[in-house]
Image (cartoon, rainbow, N blue to C red; front, side, top):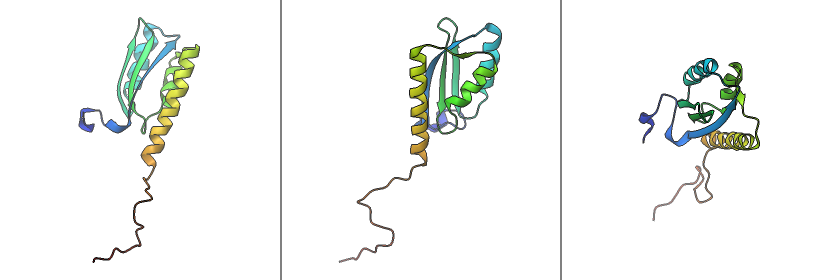
Length: 123
């Protein structure tokens, strides 16, 4: 796949996929919640499994983060499930999202590269 296979604001190198269990979800608030999340910049796809009560997200971690998505979820009256596994995954996802964002901004460095001020002599 290339960057052109995704929505605007999503780069293939920064694409992450997340699955989280939600609580306090009803038929009324899930449709509005999914619709609002679907409009966010940097989101590639979102879906909700009603049987398992889990939300599936694919987004560019440089342009969007899990905290912003959680704010929308809470705004509509739902919340992240309050179990150990969901909290563990949520913490790990936030760590990885920050790592992707930090690596995007990082300028690569190499000790084998010549300094810009050095001039190579031709023999």
